[in-house]
Length: 59
Length: 324
Image (tube, rainbow over all chains, first blue to last red; front, side, top):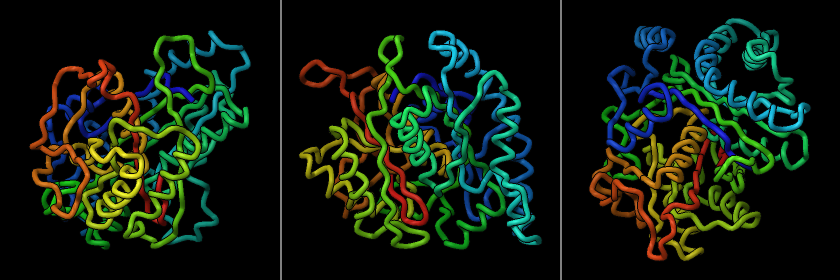
């Protein structure tokens, strides 16, 4: 089968270019956030922030 | 999540529409969604108070919402594949089956996962979240870091007319059931999946994008599987890289993200390192691209003048003992 197109949103940003830019430049996109360590969250997604807060409170 | 999908879908809708116009008007487009638990946290918490069997299937709601947002296509068949961290790989395998059975002409794979309390607590209870940073295959690796992602990949059953499409040669998976939360320690499960793969297509990778969570068990299992399988095909020096050190372990989306990264490497002929890893575990023999590895920033070619990266192997391992 054949791959015609693709797109993604990751902690590196919106789009494949941002992902590859982070990988090629050696950028670790994690930030302090998880109770035990770091987390790679999607930016500008309100739910992510809420989730992180809930996650922290629940500990 | 719907908002996230909508943003992603905007970039795809025109492309899908254009393709369908080029094909027969009756082109069938399958919709496959892959995720673990991150996008259904609300349902999980409700289920702690109610009988889960009485709750509406959350994945079905998500799929229905998506179909309503994009009414131009019939979206048949449509389903969710949730097979732990190998969900995306297994979803690709399902699409492969749909194409083989002539049940679809195109397929859209949507993969997504978010990090919430259920996911965090689950991994924390296993003590496999790194308190420092994610260093896959390193001697001092101390666990994974969780990540969020959403992705879409559009597949076609037949070779399209556009130049140089990327071909997904084959997907194979194997369920070993060794343990609920770790792979077989000797890598046998992944070897079985790779052996199955090589029985169906020629496997001669120029690069491996490994699952590489950075946990003791996962990385050991992959190392042993690669030692076993790649040595058998006389390619012990195949470079191995991965993406989780950069964007975290995106669970049900990780296989799709790695697939996208593989496509980009094939397109640009540029590879990336496992940047957080300085020194590979001394017990490991495979050729991991660490921060100290020399790589070229320009498109590279091999000794025969061919593109250096023509085939890339992407692996995934998941809870329940699934290897793909």
